[in-house]
Amino acid sequence: DPESIAIYRTADQVPNSYKELALLNSTGGSLMTNERQMFNSMKKEAAKAGANGIILDAITEPSPAVQVAAAIFGVGANRRGKALAILVEGQPVVPAPVQGKRSNSR
Figure 1 (spheres, one colour):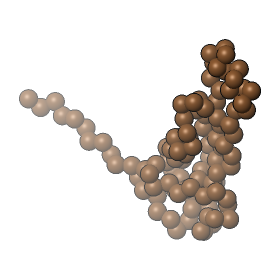
Figure 2 (cartoon, rainbow, N blue to C red):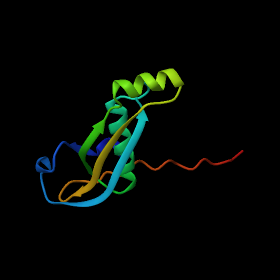
Figure 3 (cartoon, rainbow, N blue to C red):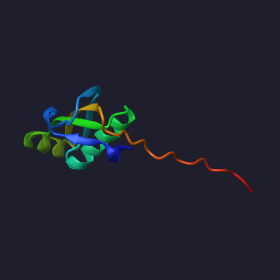
């Protein structure tokens, strides 16, 4: 469940030993996404990898010059986020609820 993924700013904050599962990359339009949306995107990908935590690496913003050029030429300027999906020992992994199958009974 993405909602159960813990976010750590540094590896030192992780409470127990952990196993690295996946590198996460997230991209979003600088005018259309915020940090929370970037984190939520990373949490979804981490959950798919079976993680229960994320160690943040960096979120980079496009420079003002790139944003101006993007506005002039009508193209997007993207912010980018990097993180590491981890499985922290001794911490629960909460699976997402299973969607029930619809029946076509009449």
